[in-house]
Image 1 (cartoon, rainbow, N blue to C red):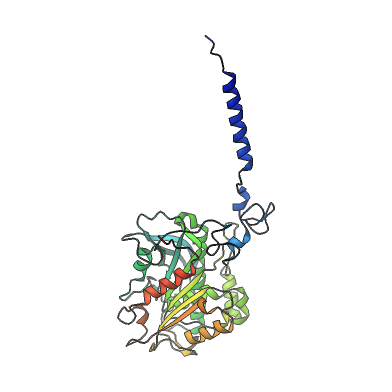
Image 2 (cartoon, helix red, strand yellow):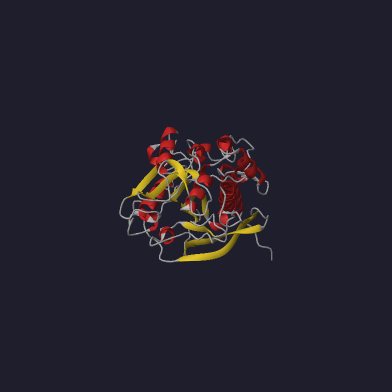
Amino acid sequence: MVKSINPMNRIRTIIFFIILFLAGISCDEEPSSCYDKLQNGDETGIDCGGDCPPCSCFNGIKDDNEECTDCGGVCSPCTQISGRYIDPVFDFYDIATNLYYGSGITEPYGDNKDLLFSFFEPSGDTVLNRPLIIFIGQTTYAENADGMFFVNSINYLEDFVQKGYVVANIIGIRYWEDRIPLKNGAFDQAAMLIGEDIRGAVRYFKKNGEAYRIDTSNIWLMGASMGAMAALHAAYLDETDFSEIDPDLVSYIENDQGINPEIDEQTYSSRVKGVVILSGMIFDTRIIDHGEPYLFSIMGSEDAYRPFQCDMVSVNWIQEPHNFCGPEAIEERMKQEGFKIDDYRFKWIVTPPADHMAAYDYNQCPECSEEIITFIASKLGYCQSDS
């Protein structure tokens, strides 16, 4: 038996497919070229402009009709999570240890060293793009140091993760293999190696941001003591500063792949959003230039191991005094360079003993963790829900 077809049903079917076809034509979908990290098609920048989202959505500025920095309006919707990044929203976190992000040759014997990190994230978190804080420990310059981030009685790591951040603690970093005493020249070269390792970690996370669910536009460094000095140089030293440092060190950097080498035919920037330094100092403030990362510095007013201005300092196992610049000199440089007043903060702890350990000691600075997190949260560019 042959079943007849109702003409009206045939007409309805034809109309239905015509509607689907027209709807497909009218869809305002972004072409795949918007995600290929190339400037092609009618793009006015790399993956932006033309048929792609406006380039103003990626400039780190709240402009046009954006609700927050680079989101809302004509850009992607802003993150709307009430309390997150300011208040504790997680009770537990997960840890993955001995993760590999690269390798490098140590000096002076040419040994190869694996560069490792531990990764901490909130348990059960479903957010796909989370700010990353990279911790650099206080023993980074010493041979056989584990690089673990030093805490006395303030558990910065837990405070961050409970508020929804993710943390990578660098536990493998290069150093100069000769033991004490360490000459100034060797110390400077070790500093360059460590700076390259930190920048390498930043590039690693930018390359693998999706796998770790990281907002690669919100990567911060946080260093303690010698780790603070390493973080400063990793954040602010770039090719434009080579005229400000020893030419031998420039050659040393360039022979060690350079500041921002190419990886897998794509160049991933080692630039970070900001830096937090606990009891830190820097070789030369001239490497800090306008438009570079945000900075929050904490130091005890009676710290006997760090200069406030620029001075010759004997640092533990360095054989001879070395010139370093402390927070007061760094702040002066940032003012001279035209940083906005809310781009940086310098906190002095005065509660006795206000020593080198003040930034890690809850008894000397019970407010330190909250103030750091408040500063960072204000720079993320995320909107917070009113609910």
